[in-house]
Image 1 (cartoon, each protein chain N blue to C red):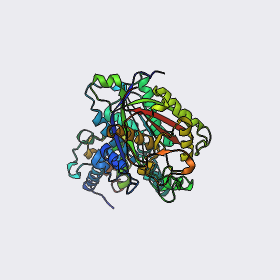
Image 2 (image 1 turned 135 degrees about the horizontal axis):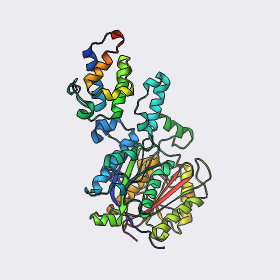
Image 3 (image 1 turned 60 degrees about the vertical axis):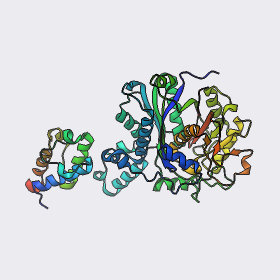
Image 4 (image 1 turned 180 degrees about the horizontal axis):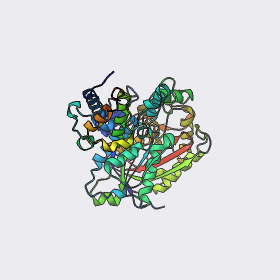
Length: 85
Length: 390
């Protein structure tokens, strides 16, 4: 199945809503999960694992500090999708 | 012997168990003198009580702990000037076995990728005491004791010691467990500890085992001086405590009650009172043939009279590590009510000898109470709680 960048964003919105208990619609590409939603390191690890399960793309923990916004994470995953490689 | 100083007071109580959620409902359920409709804390909505994010990161035992702790802290009503390094947390629990079992099954079925990164923070036994410290910012002593069914009382004894020794001014002490699920229930049943008839009948002639329950209680203990300085009114005094081990069998108590009697007498001695001062005994009273016989034998060794005895497990079930703390909460609540809570049971076993089992709510002039717990492994834990200092 081919994912669009919007598909990846939508999935991240759902994941963030489930983990953080927020409205999926309140999560945008510009959202900073730590500053805007008080996410901590465990949240980010869980989010990366859920994204890996959804898209088959591993986000190593070393990459997490560079993924400041949801858009950063979406781009990281989208550019590494098998169909993009 | 004079009482140890400083004196230790109770300034907050939080409890939830099958008879009720919150101290008021719990007490009302307890003195109603009926077994609960189910041996669970119900209806319990952890998301509503703790918030979505906190609740989803906790095993049920920690959720119970957190709700009990919040109630106790609200009653203690500390101000902004609490010194966090002088405040500690001592809980007793067997931890998040349900989380571990669920995750183990997922691992077996689907491998590592199926295992939640929250597994360890949820199942680890110290999750509840650490969670309390994080929530309230208390940086003093923080420990979790695991002595099976004696854990809750053990935690309160340790908290009492920590305040008496001067290590702490304030301690949150309690016990909690959520063991009512498949494999734990099966394991206790297979070991013949559980009642096959699902009836909790402490001291009864036909008792055939305990009934698993769940719940927890947290007591806020502080030095009398600390409480007086902030104008807090003591609900009770923890006069003393003691811990011993039967060193006999991994699951059966020493039948002659010798070592548990030593625990009782040591606790009473630490309290600076005599056995004649004890108004009633809040017994472990699980309703297993062996426990009740050994415990009554120990009580009869210690007391030269048929002291009133109650086991609230007829109404609460047995919440393992939570039991002793729940019973301590019931003891504190009995002072304000002036009532000894009843033992919900059936015809008392005549083979237990000369007994005064309290089977109906009994008005009394509140006085010191000995609360006793046993645990698999031979653990004995006793505390003496009183409405007034000695």
